[in-house]
Amino acid sequence: MAEFTRQRGKRQEDSGLGSVLDLLLANARLVLGVSGAAVLAIATLAVKRLIDRATSPRDEGDPKAEQKTLEESWQDLALIKATPKPPKKQRREDLSEPLLFPARPLAPESRVCSAPPETPHVEASPPRCLTLQEKLLSHYSSRLAVPEAQASLAPQLARSICTQLQNFLRSKCPELPFGSLFLSSPLLDGLGALAADHVHLMLPVVLDTTLWSLIPGEDTVVRNPQYWMIKRTDLEYFPRGRSPWDRFIVGRYLSSNALNETLHKMLVASINWPAIGSLLGSVIYPVVASPELKLEVKHDQVELSITLFPVVEMEDKVLLAAPPEGLVENLWLESFYRAEVSKVKELDASDSGARQHCLRILNGICKSHPALHKLSGSPLTHIVLHLSATSSDWAEESLADRFQQVLEELVGYLEKGVLPSYFNHKINLFCELLEEEIDEMGFMLYRAISEPELLLKEK
Image (cartoon, one colour):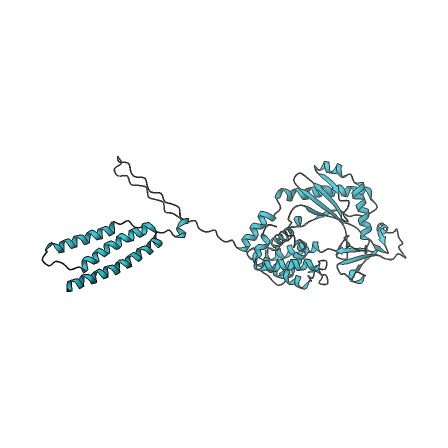
């Protein structure tokens, strides 16, 4: 009876253990797959057999029982060791590693031929992050710098046209004391240009200072300190005709509009540009519909736009015949370009600074960006000059820091809507910008302060 009870309890234990194993194997098939579940089943069976032998009673009278039990246990352990291991599940990062092909078996006749050692796999180092300064220099050299061929050919063509125009004016208008024409361009002066496509021709108008005087713009009806008027004086003692420029007087003032209209007629109708163009290997034609005195030049290697500006130099002022749009036609625009170039070069020479380099990058970026092109030129130069009064470190290594500082200064001036001239604080260089343009520029530059790479993207 006791033996029956013991065997019944053993069958119940085996039944419970079998249920657990069945449940385990069923779940293992879902988790490990068919092959993995098979391996686990074999291993589990062997362990179960070990447990059965350990718990079952041994026949005390059989001397071979212990020997048989040990042999079967070692066979079961050997069965477990011989069971092939399931393939290790690949990790996601292992998928990026190259596959290693198995080595070919050695030929039977080869005796001792050691295989060459496999070269260790060296992972490629991740690309190095460029600094802002490296990005700025790379962007300028690859996208903004003018090719050397254009940079040398454009001034050469402009000087040849300048010589031809000078000869024409001296032969056509010998009574008008024009000075010698000269070129003016950021490309020539080292302040940066997006392309060698624009050059200014400056035509000096020589006045007798005893017959002419300057009237500040704020003393006129326009109330704008950026413009001046040139007044004919002492008409009682020196009547009209005494000065060769009296033919351009409107209301006792030298009219910039009248002078421009006369020169425009000469450029359009009196000069044989096709002949001059063939002599220079290019096509030259005046722009008829433009209010400016403009020539377009097409060459095989470059296309050039040349603008002619009559210029008056009196009382340390440089005045251009570039009146604003409107009914007032006697105004002359004060230009600070020559002073800007001179001051920037002087500061760079004094501390071996990189202001010119910074301006070349800034001008190139602003000219290439549709929303910022009106900031190129004088506004940027005046901001750099203002900043030079407070920031002394303009070394090449600090180029990126100064670049970002210029952006911050620009945002501050745009918020106020006022950028005072470095040479005359009464003049607001933003006075001709519309409110919508100021908002668009300010929004773009505000984003660029925290993410300067926005300005380096393709437009």
